[in-house]
Amino acid sequence: MTTVVEVSDEQILRALLAEEDVSNRAVALKLGIGDRRVDEVRKRVGLPSYVRGRRPAYGSWLEAFTEQSEPVEGGHRRWTGTRERCGTPVVRHRTSIQTAYRVAFRLHNGREPEGKVSQSCEIPGCVAGEHQRDRVMREAAKAGEAA
Image (tube, rainbow, N blue to C red):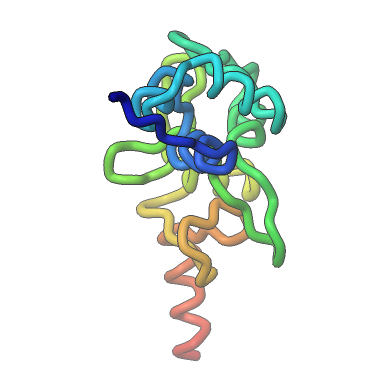
């Protein structure tokens, strides 16, 4: 006798949202259901279809950054795009890869950052350009405090 396990649409949706860019097949295997059921839920909630293979080519760093992040309350920005294995958000444009923090800094400040880029806000992973500081900005702030 085979036991039938009921899987809710909510469970399917959670599995789809648990990982970035997960296939219907991966979710179906994880939950023990058919691919078609996962596809139906994906369509019903308005999630884009899974695209196998190459990812979209962006026309500029700005387009790549904007398409892979979203504004959130308080002037912060959440990364929704690709991450390195260690969790660092990265932007790919043509043949280059840079951290989202460096790209955000450059887009906001109009110059390349010098040294390491670090956040000035307390929101983990925020990629808002105005919340990124380079070595020059940190040193200037430190000098201002000392004066």
